[in-house]
Length: 539
Image: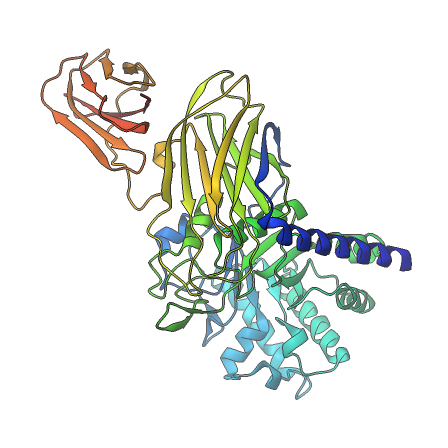
């Protein structure tokens, strides 16, 4: 075990040195490289790392649903009668017993919480009632957390801590044999402390179904090392079984609102094959007021009104809209410049999210770099010209939270594939920014603050538009009904041209004054049915 420990120290030191050198050398670096391997699918068991904690009904529910949350942790939102708020989402839920206990009995400081007082009777009754209520009110909880952040908030002895877990596990399993326990939920990762917890649980016959801690550091890449240390430790402890690995909260106060950093967290979580990750919440500041974003702000997704998105919302929204399970492998030349990617064989769209993270402090940025994103083994057309849209999610240039109505469109045009490869260059890529690259985008799914209107559909094959790309005129042909209305929208959903009348079945429109880029044409026939077609203008 001593040699294994030494190896981990060496690996950790190597990662730190590489990270340090990478940061120091940014001023000299000219270009960074990302490779998106279109023919290599990621492990289909990769879990969407979209999780949150706390919250309630005061934030923007429709926008939050679009984040497709997979996990949610509940704590202080427990009210009289052991009741708690559960958003109407299809996700896994975790409830914090100690937090509910404190709220119910009006204990303001966890250091004053001493459940062993009175021979544990009050604690035992509370745990029994809480899990029973989750069953009788049809509010299932997937994991029960006994005590959050005990390395900073538990005032008892180690023996009392172990006994609390033993008693809680016994009560949970007696009421609901399928109940799952998670712990210890340490604030900081420490392999020694976690091994002590695992061995102590083994000694009393308790085997949590999930092991948990927080990741609040400034180097997301070390998560992989942490997870491997735990898995190696469990491999020589067969009594512990095969528990899930949960990061109950991630991203510290300095970096958690920076889009590029969140790409880093999500990328290395996926590489580590975690089972659960929930974004942390702290106090926020908007230049005037301070608020607790564990509630209205939803872990940095919204401003204090619980409605207006921050940049981080759009990053997590883009992540949620990557196609599952068609995730594809990416690699990079830098630890701190990484990408997440997916493709959809049905509509032949590829999406790539790229982020850079170097300075961990909001409002400060290291030198920008040029980033080359190379698409290899593209599956949807060799030697082809494909529509291309690039959006930017900018990092805050100030040290406090700012609103962002939608990602910023920075390029709309085409990309040329030579054989099955193409290179997209993101010049002047600022530290902390994130970019979304859409190749042959589905315009109904482009992130914006507006929506493309809906209507009764014209049969898909009855309308044709050509040539595509177009430079002078765009021809439209309807094999069935006459066309009565034509509307052209750019990649942001903005109407750039509109005409109505009786056009027959083969009208044309002039696009010679349109800017190069990707467009959507809305075509209505004399029955009131609508069809949308994409086309590209290229002069």
